[in-house]
Amino acid sequence: LTVTTFGESHGPAIGCVVDGCPPGLEISAGEFTQDLQRRATGKSRHTSARREADEVEILSGVYEGVTTGTPIALLIRNTDQRSKDYANIARQFRPGHADYSYWQKYGIRDPRGGGRSSARETTTRVAAGVIAKKWLAQRYGVTVRGWLSQLGPIVPQGFDWNAVEENPFFWPHAAQVDELESYMDALRKSGDSVGARVTVVADGVPPGWGEPIYGKLDGELAAALMSINAVKGVEIGDGFDVVAQKGTEHRDLISAQGFHSNHAGGILGGISTGQQVVASIALKPTSSLRLPGQSVDVDGQPIEVVTTGRHDPCVGIRATPIAEAMMALVLMDQALRHRAQCGDVGDVSPRIPGTLDG
Ligand code: EPS
Picture 1 (cartoon, rainbow, N blue to C red):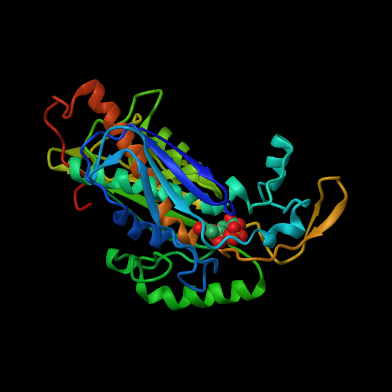
Picture 2: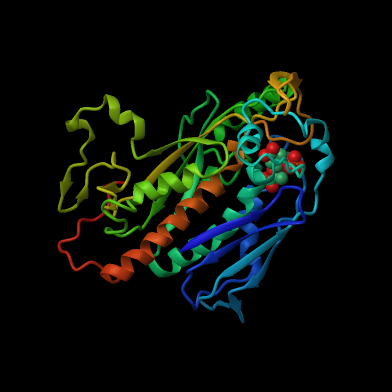
């Protein structure tokens, strides 16, 4: 399975091509709405005020409501462009923004927003992920879900899946939503931005997905999740906490009834164990700030950059559906690869059930 995306934040449209989806999957344009709206701007005062329709047009690869096996092209027209927002910084580098490295690489400045580096690009990944989520659910009963697991300094004090979709943050503990609202209100008024952490899990993944060396499941997940704009860190399972762990703490004991814990995040040696697959991402604070920051312009002259326009004070707030989409796409790819080499079900027995109580 390969996915490529195209488009600029202030161009006429954005979109993606999903190549390698098996034929026969039922899919309609309306099925993209839910996840695209979960990710969209303008849903609360805590995200960018830009109002996009985010409607998907299926251009190819689907005939009479089912995938044909040919490349699926999805188009999302931009409906609320405002590239003049970028006129005054068209020759400036925002500190902490890809403006600088894009310029060094290409020597061309596209005035249509951040172009490829805009969070707008992630819309198309979510659209592609809808196909992967549906295929995984139908074919293998796999579900992929995520939540915001840290907002700046605030961490969840409880966990309830029902809470996650009931607040604008994807926060798993309803009692803290007021605290998050106040934190974000104060942050927005100050003109600053903040980072966040998103955790995403896949349930129902059978053992055996992933390649042992090249194309490890965790390696592919890390690359896919790191390819999301603003991501600076990826953890699998206990991630960087393993540094302080002893072997006796970290290892997941096994009995015939199941694994006793899941420090490994459902992956051993690059291959799924049949437990929940767990990954977290760290998203940096948005670099487009109205607070002045020291920088240079394209001629190397010292300047103070002030970014106006519509920006997210915390891109992590909208990142949960994006992380879910990237995990689903990697899992679908690995499922197809595993099926090609080993068939649908491994012939190994006995198979250990997933994590006990997990
Ligand atoms: C973004 C800036 C704002 C956001 C945008 C991401 O848009 P713009 O300045 O291009 O109008 O609204 O996010 C989206 C439009 C989206 O759909 O996610 C940025 O600086 O990355």
